[in-house]
Image 1 (cartoon, rainbow, N blue to C red):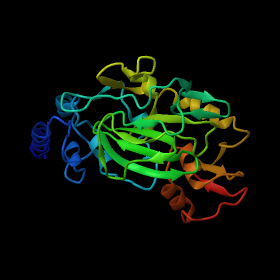
Image 2: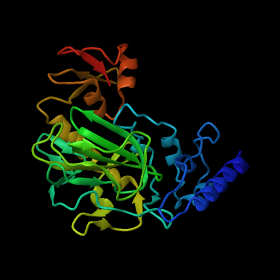
Image 3: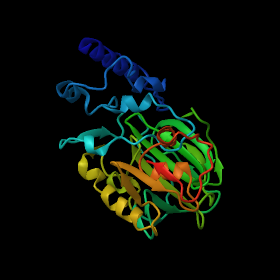
Length: 305
């Protein structure tokens, strides 16, 4: 199995090298992941070290096997499984188009606690109709309208990262479309849960938000480095985010029954919102509670989360 795994990695790298061209194309997007049905999730750490700094990064290949074009948020990996060591993500190399700032406006709201909720992105000031660009090469996973994000585009990148571009007035890309850093993916706007035209920009790794300031200088409008170090400190904010959720006038508070989290439905709650708040999925909540995703929630209803 080990020999098969190393052979697959070598084959993927050879395809990647052959795909270089003047227009920064990296060819078939599937070259950046390994089929999890072929390669077991548990990988020897010595094997990991050989390709830890490449675009084929553990455990990114496992993420790519879940190509969900319906749910905006991918399932979150369990941060508690991170070891004390760090993972090095390659943000770009000579075969890619590098980095392009999504929009050169001033930051109006930073990543972190904001009033009654946690803000998982960076808000950039713009005018409705301004062109918004893809930050990195990737493939469009989401291009749709949602209640909170408005018109939103989610681009998945070959290193396991995903970038979000929300509140757009117009979407200029399609699901499954290959895009490159600097490509126009939409026009800025004020759609969804928004007050005033701006771009809400997020960076996530395997579903978990990352502070964009960890990799991008929004003053200089460029990357801080060509790699990103991921470790437990990267996600230390999660404990603060949970505290903020518990202060939302009782909204977000849960009780424990026989060791199981039980949430009491409040006014305005949706299954997707509850799932996002507790780092799970709508399908998981439905399975635990024996309900359908189309079920109408009742005030005071108890849900296992």
